Length: 297
Image (cartoon, rainbow, N blue to C red; front, side, top):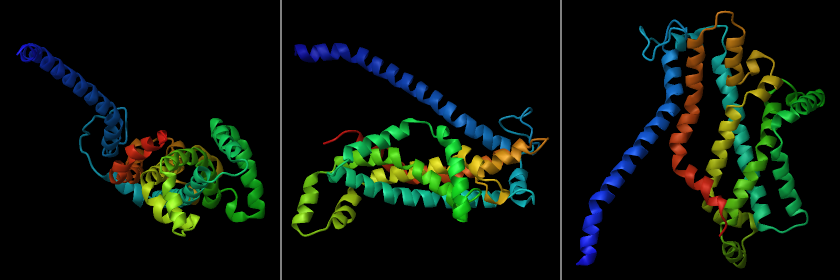
């Protein structure tokens, strides 16, 4: 009876505290959502403004129309469709190759014990510490000289740009996937070997289905990083036909004396669609894939 009485006395205060805590969390969440969505909403609004002037931009533009989107694809001076296609080609190719190489490499580092294993892992991590911009001059010189011998890997080629992206995506992804592979019990490998399975069969038929979440996360991060990269693409690509969408949008603005922000925002909105679609389709895998490899056992 005394316990029930004490709980009854604490109930109104505890309930009030829970309500206040819930209201505070909701307010904080709404503020964060507002700050996250406002730039995107403003870009959509600007893309519907036929004047293309941000100085007089309002959240709901008067006389909103799709003229900026029509100009983006109909203007003979713009190659937006080509830019989008180039970005998708490079991003999808780099993503597929990166996932293939990263998964097999991480599996080898996680399961096999060989000479230099620890040194290689530390070297990969150490390389990732230095910003990529430090290697910009070296990368440019390397691609320039390589193009003299192998033209399709030289400057102003999507293939050469893709190989640079592929090398940059290896390090952190290998560490991320290795941590995930370490959480998979080694007993699965031993049971498969007892049944006569090879290392490849063990990896593809037993281990790979278990690590699908982190594979999807690595693919998503690689695609987004490659798709949105600007600096390397700006340095290595020269002709309009070979531009990615980010470089193309930059050129759209930098080469005009009267900047049309409406067309620019329309291009930015369309360029964001593939990433939004990927996030919506793969959101169930993102949290699990990023956190499951953070601990072992």
